[in-house]
Length: 83
Ligand code: HEC
Image (cartoon, rainbow, N blue to C red):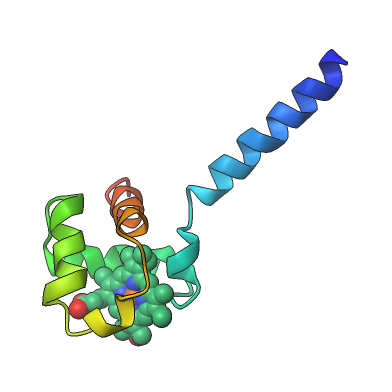
């Protein structure tokens, strides 16, 4: 029984780690998060909130990002700034 729990926990851990490398709602259109990270760097935003503001209001591509959630935008920023 303990072993089963360990395997289960391992699986959950692996799943959460792999999702840390890509924000699902972004990679639907953006093939890789590397590209997104590059865009973030170029935009010059310094915080997750600034990035939300940029993608929502300032970007020329803002219309394309209406459907993405704030939390996903913030997640993408957190991920990009790790690199
Ligand atoms: C509906 C499709 C779609 C989704 C979903 C999407 N994007 Fe985009 N995004 C685009 C397109 C198209 C561009 C234009 C550039 C390109 O072709 O890569 C773009 C451009 C950008 C840019 C550059 C904007 C600029 O003005 O410099 C950033 C940053 C960006 N996306 C971040 C994100 C993040 C973060 C997510 C997830 C939260 C996301 N995108 C989800 C389609 C999408």
